[in-house]
Length: 201
Image 1 (cartoon, rainbow, N blue to C red):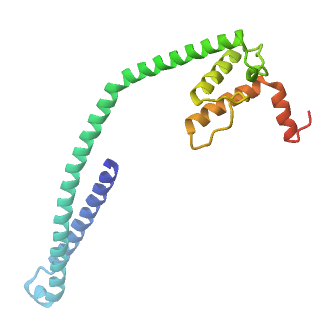
Image 2 (tube, helix red, strand yellow):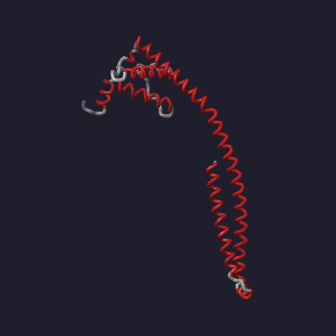
């Protein structure tokens, strides 16, 4: 990924700096033996320092080549990222508009289903009471239940049927939202749950 390549480039540049510092230190060591006699007497030390410079120089060349390759790869990945972002931004307005359209259609469908329920309430919805503080909550809840039952083929006497498994996350989330609303609008159900948990009322 782009981030991995950038981290690798940072490491390579750091390594290159360390190698250059090592070369400079070795060269300063050689420069200390600036007289002819001094160089002769310290030939072994100078040879060791020179080998260190040669090795570090070879490694530095490899690091420079690697850094150049990484910069090229990063530039390519950054270009791909910019093009992907531009493409996403081009698609987003139509997708947002489509999302609003779908949400509007779903709300209209839920409202229509709620209106049908008001005219002929099925047995599985009769325990769900209207909330005087929030009259729209009942319509939203029963409309949502009817949509849920239609979407998942629920024929049970319980409004939502059996609780779905957590692997079906969309359905499980839908179930939890509706189940919470049902609980709030069904006093007898909430009271029975409290009793089951050993809570005295």
